[in-house]
Image (cartoon, rainbow, N blue to C red; front, side, top):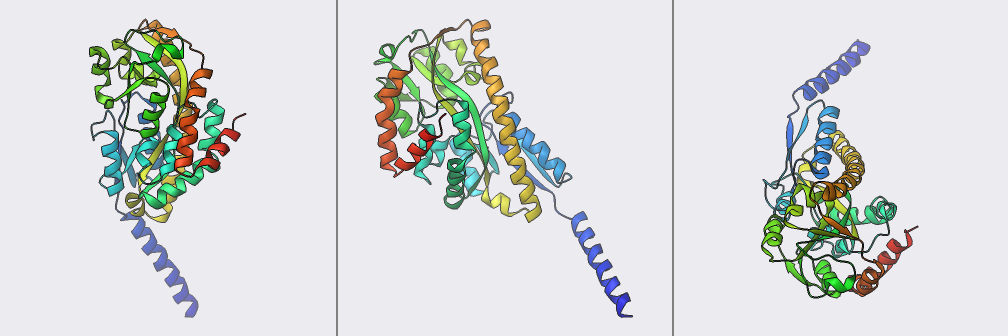
Length: 329
């Protein structure tokens, strides 16, 4: 009799688990992406969505909204923090109010090459930063998108040396380290929202801006410009974030699925972004007739070093800056 009861108990337990799984409530997450549907950020988020749906048998779905339809980058980040939106790709500077060192990753001329950038993002520094952000900002760093090289784009002026940018109006975004860097380089920084850059270049509100070649083509900035200076002042790192509140709603098993898919999506996105960045650079010449110049990088690096050192000191990150420098090979 006892054997029969134990057996029945196991069977009932198994039945309960099966019924629980069958009745598990489906969850739909929303990802907000500032850039177009053709940009690697969006494709990386969609890759994540496909993996999550596949590995949870459709129990967890992710809807991806591109082109900033859910708000600006900073607006979407705030929504993710509050749990009103689930996922976003954002600039490190938006995380700086919660962890000041994050601005370090936005410093121009920080990385020597792509291998250097990857060693920082995928190594101890990136892991340490992710842990700090998760503790302080109510968001989970799923991984780091990015990998594009940022250059200068100008309405008419050809930039052949650092002398050519002295006194020009330069579009920047709201980041103190970015503003300070372009001041140190001799420009007059002007904060212009991403969505307004095309018009700012077209009308002469600014003479130059800076971004990836992919942005120059997908956002059509190249239509309002004639030259691009290959300053290669930044190789991007862009945190892929999930609301901590959204993650907490998932079962432990689904949380692991989501985290793993986030890491894989980040690796996929970086590879895709590097490839598409090279294609976009070629399009600048072949499709838009942009003139490319290659100013010597050394004067830019030397003149901006004080900004990097000064910022690191201001947030107590001198050792981290040296750690990052030490990862270059």
